[in-house]
Image 1 (tube, one colour):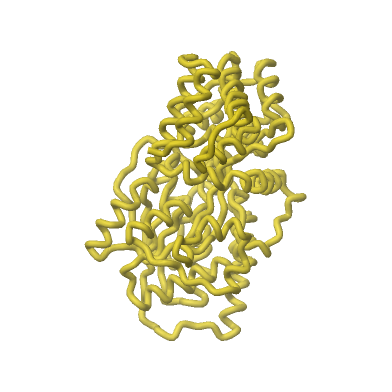
Image 2 (image 1 turned 135 degrees about the horizontal axis):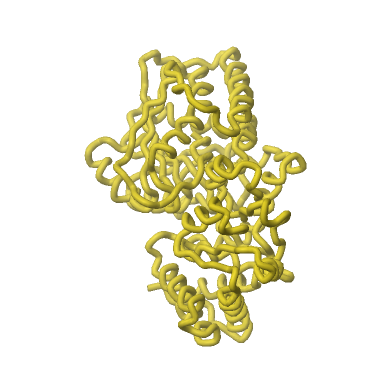
Length: 449
């Protein structure tokens, strides 16, 4: 299941009804052109299959021989669109894990459904009332917390040995107020930068270098919605001030100066002829694909699609830092959460599958099979010297550790998020000067409505 996250971010144009696709290993994929990265996935599949085969020979076998379909609901990020391409991405990624898991549990089959993450609570409550709630939900850690509060899921039982596989920050992001976990951590998706190698040989390493590159004629794109600009808070040294304001602390001269410096940079960037601001992330990605932009921030979930369409043109790097301060990308932990209405046998299969995906060899194979996500198992080594993309993902993970307190602000529907981003839009378009916007931003961050 952990491989669910390894798919490209697609345009947010429309959201059709959830699509249910049973994955049965005896059905072969239809013939067609070979996709980029297929050999990488075959290698990863071989590693996983070998591991599962070894476990099966060791005596792990299901006691119940009756067929079981494990229903898995997948939350799709706000910047992805549920369509045929996304379904195929999920099918390709799941097939490896399904075939390997069925070496241990040959009577268990998967059926998955895709749902917009922002609609999960309403949809799952309806399905729960109808007895159709999935056995497992593959979602981000914020959604897992909200679904638990809504009574859709139950706490995930974990052992001390399992908890020991995670860094303390991962556990904090999934811990429930009353104890237990909202879901079992599986993978981490990152916010990085994507650039066109034909237009720039290397990505800028600082925000000053980014503006200097644009001044030389290099086209740069920045998306404003859904917290996509909040990485600049860290680069401009405003993150500590934002954290204090979010805790409701008073704003002194240092906080005013830090927030003002951040808004000044955004205003300066908007005056650059070759810097374009976009209301949605998918618009910036499409411009990068078309060659109209040379550099954009991007989510790691977009990398498969960008690789497929850009090939060797695509470069991946960490987001640019500032002088004495690091960028603050908003990274996400993806978890497996337990549906409340599962049968006892389905619950046992869900727990077995969840534990299976945490095996170090499985996590490593998934990481090396996608170059899109990072493992949450802290005992898994990542060969950063062998891949600039992996090195960029690890750097983004390290940058993002400082921005954990921003995650609650980014919850869909959070009033502070909407109001803060609306004010940023006014600054970017010159409707409000940074010095006027600074006290307003401070009031927004301090007072949740």
